[in-house]
Amino acid sequence: MRALLPLLLFLAQPFWEANPPEKWTDREIDAIRRDSPWAQALAPDPVVVAYFATAAPVEMAEAELRLRMKKNTSRMPEPDPDYVDYLRENHERQFVLAIAYPTLKGLGNAEESKRMEEESAMAIGRKTFKLVGHFPPTPSDPVLRLIFNREVKPSDKAVSFRIYLPGLNFPERDVEFRVKDLMFQGKLEM
Image (tube, rainbow, N blue to C red; front, top):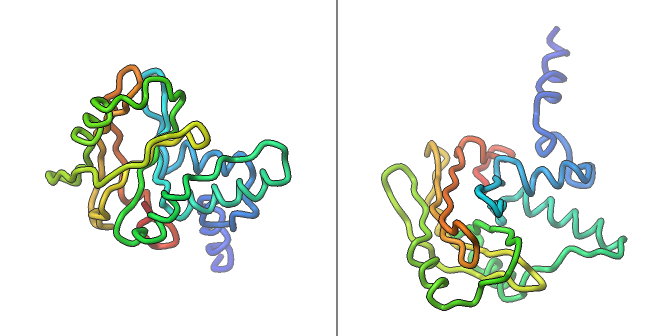
């Protein structure tokens, strides 16, 4: 009976805890990026996916996907080099909530961009934190990246975001993540 308990605990673990990325299936990689503790679909139409681009499981899934796609004719877009440099310098102090954009139509309006900067915020309990900065989506990398300071603690219950998405119908969107679900290998990942 004692020998069976570790096996049951191993089987009860989510795949991202039980296996390294190279053993994840394509479906599992897609799940981490679209429907996991680190990613949620935001309605109404057009539905967009918000995800923690700086969470280790998402970073590992995207790195593995890039490796797999190098063998195919279709390639996953590489992030903006300025964004990659920014992350290298600020990864410990800030995290990125990314939104995959379905269309770039309507982007580039300065007034809409200013509204996004003013209205997008993170809430933890009763405290609200403003957006630190952002990297806009581009044709080669259609992902809006919103940057926030790492204020969330493992003891917090939830972290929620009110975001304004320029260029989309129904641009005001809300999303909430349960902090305890954002744990990976015993560490809070965002």
